[in-house]
Image (tube, rainbow over all chains, first blue to last red):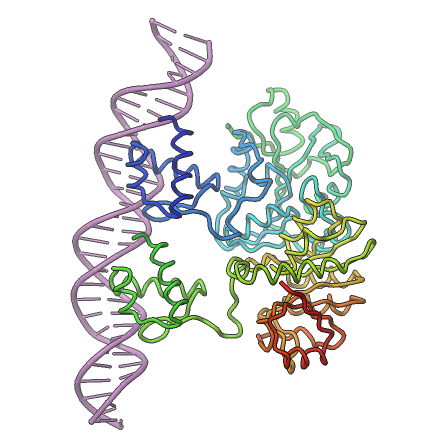
Length: 251
Length: 251
DNA sequence: CTATTAATGATTGTTTTTGATTGAATTTGA
DNA sequence: TCAAATTCAATCAAAAACAATCATTAATAG
């Protein structure tokens, strides 16, 4: 039995019975206990079920169900590795800002629980955080459909009232001359403020965003740690390493 | 029997009998007394029941709040009729406030598209609105897990900057002496402001919220239109009709 | 065809759950 | 009010379930 087949069968059984124990699944699939455990971990990650001690159950509460974006996100290995590393930087009692976006979104499963406080402009990010019982402040304002993020006067006003130990931003372009850029000026402004109010600044960006420029400037590279994958040339690494702190993670 | 199964059974039994003894639960589940005690502690922590000496009982105190899920199953038809009627009141170019909550959530499919602008404190409401391409402003602030709503200073600040043609609120209690009440003071305050900043004020409430009082007062009934189902007695209709404008819709 | 990667199942030591036991706290009834 | 009975929380050891690791097998790429 192939893995996707098995996964499908497991999900079907869970849906049918609401709750199944590991042993039942072993019997139903013919796979070993180890394999079933691995399957359950994966399926839980994909939010198709919930692991419980001894087996698995359906997701029941409204709050456990995945959002639209969550499903559509491609789990690109590079983004995941970047996000995972970024999350590892967070220490207990940190107050942090997490920017809306798919790369930053990937950080959430790896956030530590230890009493951190998160401010974000991403609605789906806020929902995910609250699912994980992490104290969450969502900036208000007009909701942008494309990115499910908050922009505008209210968002700015709200943001100005916080100070962060660390901020984690996504970006659409990183360039040696033009610094960080993003297509929407409103979003750019939110990012600017977040940078301004943070002790440590991290930008998560896969390597193909480099040497790319979009419309609105967010800021320069000085004082920023850029976390990226190993897709940069030696030369690029040197250039950007001089302008910012460059952290390369392997996928 | 897996732990969540057992928990579910316990909660079901408590709901059914209002109060159960430990020994009954031991018998019903086949688990030991120790395990049941541990279960009860957990379930009490989750606010699904209340421990009492010798067993457990349902919780009914004013401040104890049911979760989103629990609320949404009850009174489907009544809520839908109420919501549908409320939505029909909205006119083109209205700017409106929609309160977080399951009843108000039901309004969304019936909202007219004509250039309306909606402000809300409900995250799930905002997501739904934006899907329908309706201009949406979401109040910022600290996100409350139980109701997926925004409360706190930021929400208040943001809200104070808008004025509405109409506002639509949910409530947990309507009483002739104590007016509108809700369990959470923070939420109550948001509702208060919304009422204050609206030309017309609508409260959506199924009939069994009447003559019920919870912890925090939202406001009096004067100047408010209460939309409810036909589950009120003649006498109640008269009483509440004098205090507010009462609109009864049939499910 | 071989090298490399991915998936699997067995095994390990660790963590979680469980039920029994204890003495303390609470209720009950005289 | 006091004493007996019951219920309770805390502790412990056994059992079950767990994550992590490793060797083996299957799949894939070069």
